[in-house]
Length: 494
Image (tube, one colour):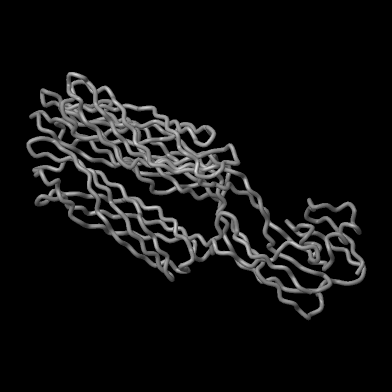
């Protein structure tokens, strides 16, 4: 008897359970030069973000390259800000890693310290690197066939097909009364809606911007606005499913003054928009099999299916108090928030995402000097999802951090966090990858046999224990069905 094996790629992802996940920390040190035409006597604020630019999987090892994007606000005779990039390389052990596997990296800056040096900013950062290995290689698995009894596990997943990607540039004018000079600008963008329009997709979104400006009296103020936008993204492939989802990355934001007489500031943004169509797919794999007439033993391989379940999004508003130990706040002038994700736990309704908000405030003291203070505040955001064993590929951005109140010894900051995540359900199972003929006779009882179902035993498992087909078992016991209960009895004549 020959058995048919099919070469397939298990949908979405199949991970060897022993080579699934790993974690590492990267120590990143460097020196960031000041702009050519600038010197600085104080570093008032600095924020950073991390991105990976290249990932290679070697035997039992992961090698990656990336950038730390740094944004600094400094002072010489006046306030100024600038952006810079520090490159880094990092490698770490990952048992079970093979070159044909794909590494999905999630990196966060868990520590970010900067100090002012000689014409440079000294950087000392620690990045938390979470790695998930995905093995999408094809496997020889037992196919579904009629000449044996088989136990199958079915699954459902969301197939996210890329349909378009484009880098767009936005240019808008916002009101900023008396703005003579722009000191700092930052922001983020989110997608609100998508609509299929023939050969393109109309994307509606919000660009949230924050601008620190100086007026003619050399005083400072912060302007925060939400700017609606709409862009058309050309389709790169056919969209067969009407359900769309997207991802947006804010690559660059800048602002320039138009003169205090106009009361306007020109904001320019560079956004990368990636769009996907979603379709629900189903499948099944054989996890066990037997043949009463031609006995064999199954060779099984443990796998962990990572089944995409689509995307989820949640906004949450916060108001936090930054304590100023010096107790010398005269007037706040600026607030900024850099959120990072530190973990996720299952809740009754979904997944609770934990993180830290790094809050920076700038203010004038009682002697009219500009000072700054940084504090860390924990946050939690709950994503609603019905799945039990869940993993997230998540990203959180801050929208419009503003000062909402102050005393001499504290500054209140209000802000909104927007959490976007691709949701995966983890499914641990086995797949039959081989079948070996055996010569031993069956150990199943013979004669007129009465058998009682064990707890959680299925019709398949009961028939296998009796070494009969499911059809034979059900034909001799017409009261039985697939919903067999513990203690129910069956009679067979062997």
